[in-house]
Amino acid sequence: MPEDPYGIRPGELAVSPPERFDAELYFIGRIRTPWKTRDECPKNARESEAVCTIEVDPRWAQALTGIETCTHLLVLYWMDRARRDLVLQAPRHYGAPRGTFALRSPVRPNPIAASVVRLVKVDGTSLSVVGLDCLDGTPLLDLKPYFASTDAVPDAVVGWHAER
Amino acid sequence: MPEDPYGIRPGELAVSPPERFDAELYFIGRIRTPWKTRDECPKNARESEAVCTIEVDPRWAQALTGIETCTHLLVLYWMDRARRDLVLQAPRHYGAPRGTFALRSPVRPNPIAASVVRLVKVDGTSLSVVGLDCLDGTPLLDLKPYFASTDAVPDAVVGWHAER
Image (cartoon, rainbow over all chains, first blue to last red; front, side, top):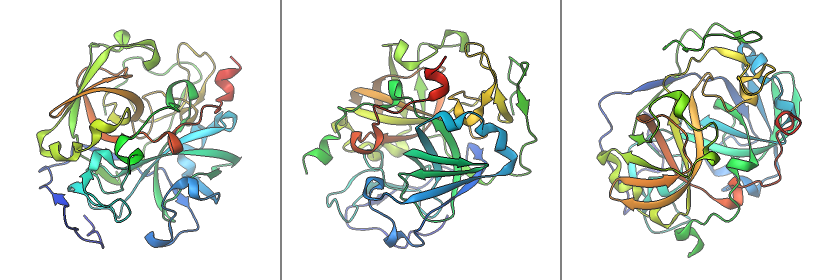
């Protein structure tokens, strides 16, 4: 497991990881973004209108059939630089420590990110999208159609964040 | 890989899987639902107001700190009964074959489901939620706070579905 370059901050807590893994993933493509280091990445995907490119492995080309009819996608990707053993985290911009499952930090037992993107263009196995904030070269795990009927909850509230 | 009991239908297409896996997952808990077979599961999570229980492994208990302030969560779980090699699928209720990445079917290279749930209650490491449609015993991968600002896109359209 790669070491987190930022280490543990005051108030953070690590646990010992489970003895074994339970399931395995394929990387099905790569995400190309303008950001080569963590410090360059936008803090929030809504901060950037950058068009990023999702390059799907040709093996899965036919799995894209019909995706061009979607205005938005849910993209799952693998945050392969993050440590996986923290249960309490104190992100620099939030102050007080919070539980990993109350945060969208890349540091989590299974570092799978889920981002909603706007689909701009499909060109073969390359998808141009807006709404990502990850490092260039990030491994792709899945693409799903975004259904407003089940995925959109405009009045949802994250209390600790709203009260800051 | 478990065999899909329904097999391949006309118009469906399988590819040979990659030679190796690229990353590994921990199961961090289990989801308890009223549904013991696939046929019992609701076709769509919005069809059911059933309260389901997410049981988080005690190892990760402190990672739940602050989660009770969230009205909604994004739940990632592992659909461990699904085959992973189909690129075109013809779900019974949709007719024409479509690409795996244009569908929310459990059959996909990485069978990770993403569901938005309403958080009803937190009792230690048990979370009561509404909005799941999975089998009882499904392995849990991740819990994330749902941020309306980035996760809710009420006007998103899945064209092929809207035109049915």
